[in-house]
Image (cartoon, rainbow, N blue to C red; front, side, top):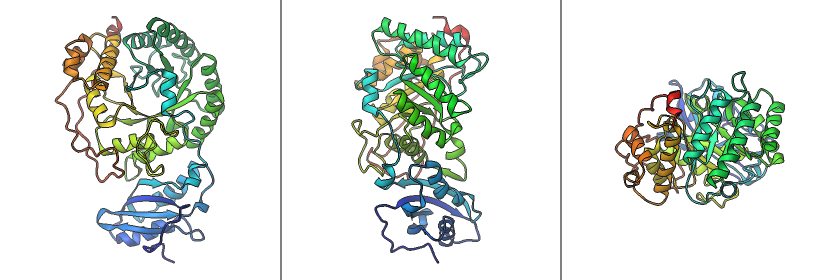
Length: 436
């Protein structure tokens, strides 16, 4: 029995998945689509109800009865398991998922939401600034203490562990947690502003990650991060419940995301952003390129994707923070805010650490650029009044990128990737650069 049924009207309970498919040369597009849909079974047959052959796209409606309630791993096994493994297609990409409300209700989603996170950090309007330790590996706990002090003193709201920074002989988790939680309190008292440290609690077992989460809470902190794809979706689901019990805000990095988002068989970044938001992440990186895919990923995290039926809204209870990261420096802040809005975390590592005058001045330059852009002020005008930003622009800034290729925030589909060229990454910071 054929799975192609162009007259089928999806039920409100169906999970609808939009694919881009490249068939093997010996197969027609329609035949390839039929065979792929048949991989999900016969008794509860999915229906191919929409085909756009000129774009190599199709839409498949999966009956809700195929899925286990709240089990993202099993859901992916149905829509991206055998379908990805089969030999009838050269490439299969999941571009978008339309979720039925019944399935959404079975997933935790963010426990706090974008608005509550802002309240905890006492930052109402502008993007949040975040420093990630550099280099990512090889630092001892005392190095982290020094860097964190410099970043917080320069104005950064957040300091976060890198994906490689868990608990090693050189840099034990407990020692780093003790030092930085104490330093955070001192910097908060000195500045009169809220400062936050986000430790990486990733470990080889959920039990160990739970123990680290409890220690974070006992240290007076409210945020944790994990290596999202290395710990896996099942562990992420468990951590979401653990963090809810401990009143912790769960964030994630996207280290290794290319295993899922690049190559012949892939999930689009907006789909991946939606999945981790539904599992409870409050912050998740979307990259740094001013592209349509990054724009849609930002919208997906802010609960403006297809399943919510509305545009980005910080008051939406399921909204998470998009994190712009990778090859970022103060000169790029203005363009990012113009393209994506103010509900962002702007995360920099080398863009702070490699400032000519060190981490403190690098953090000051980033914070100055964020505040200026949020108030609609030109970065060059702001730099004329701040030497830290002036030096940062002198080192890194390029001619502003055109934003004409970006869709408006109401756009819901990625027809093509219009990534803009990137500036070269700054050189690695030396220990001498830490002496302010």
